[in-house]
Image (cartoon, rainbow over all chains, first blue to last red; front, side, top):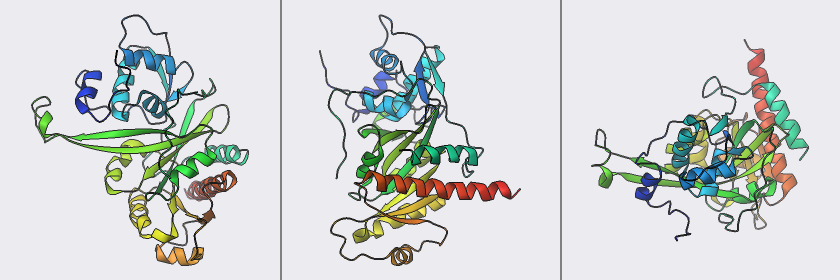
Length: 118
Length: 205
């Protein structure tokens, strides 16, 4: 058994994990919160098992990436597969209307309130 | 300084089950300026580390046949987390300011609330590029000057503003990245700034 984490420096290994794919769309933001919708089952790809275990509580994509020790793109591909199969749900950040647009003042007030209470 | 990756069996602190909105703030700065220190001082978890790999293939090259010709760029960054309330969680990213990193800005940090440029007065030139790129991406930012113990020169904020050619509209703040209250103040300065900008935008139809 090889217990070492996947060597993220080896792109070929990563293509194996993702079934040869290296491009992910940007559906999942770094801070999209992922929630498992089922328990892992026998025969599931090991990375899928890990994700379903991690996401029993809401977990941001970037945390999944750090825990799996896999690059963001690879995790986006894995999450896309699980989402297509209905095994996870995704809570996306509120989308900004455009790249340069600012968030609403109400949201910022909530952020300020949270920070002041730290 | 370095990155503070936890290699221990992770004792994960899960988010509240009601958590629904993730937010991002990015801390940008040169090597050793204290990004990780700042993230750690305010984060509720030990900073985690991850990376993004960008693979550039030749245009029109077949996916399989082109494997040898792909060039791979890796950008590592660390991050921490602040649960603002039961529903909102703020992720704080410490990101290197070097050139290759900006190729990935849109893929990683589009939709970010704003940025903190962390400045070391001994190496102010490290900040120029980051400031230029943030302006290019139209990302609102504040400048935080990390006052190290050995900061003998004690340039005033006004002197630093001039050295960085910063407009008067960009808030500046002194900080000690090691101190939680100070890191918190930096974040509040940024969000106050965003709030003022958003307010004036809402009032201007």
